[in-house]
Image (tube, rainbow, N blue to C red):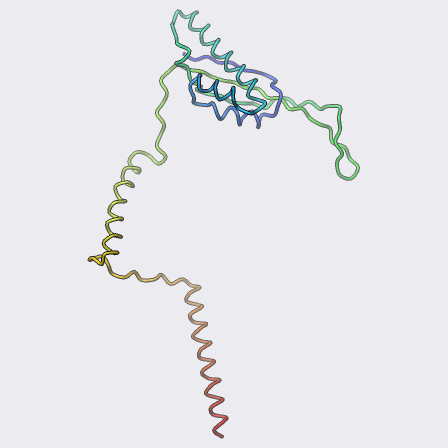
Length: 193
């Protein structure tokens, strides 16, 4: 069974209300009410009121359908915030180049959907098969590195990867040494004559 409640024209911007709604999405009702009660956000009060309304709607719908539900079994299946209208206030703020910006008052609409159905299990980040293979591959890599440290069969020294910068710097060093040797030979040749 599902129950919905919406609170319209709540004061505050939708962006700030979404920060609160994101904290309660997917949680059970008691935990969500606790989060809302102690959340240090202005939007939390209106969202808590909407949540209590959704719980009452669920109880009412269950009574009409002659179904006994426990409010503790409810959880927040969906919760979202829509942007409401903005109202221009009569106050102005100084703006650049002699202009004035009017202050705006933002409003938002909150909708909460509660359900007592079984929750879907959380999905793995990469899928079940890939996660298992990744954990199995780690011990082999560790064993290889341990044998390399101990001087086992896999203890062959690793070759350094040469990058383009390293190649060009080694060429430049070789050219610099060659110039120095030419200068030194010229000086030796001029002193003999």
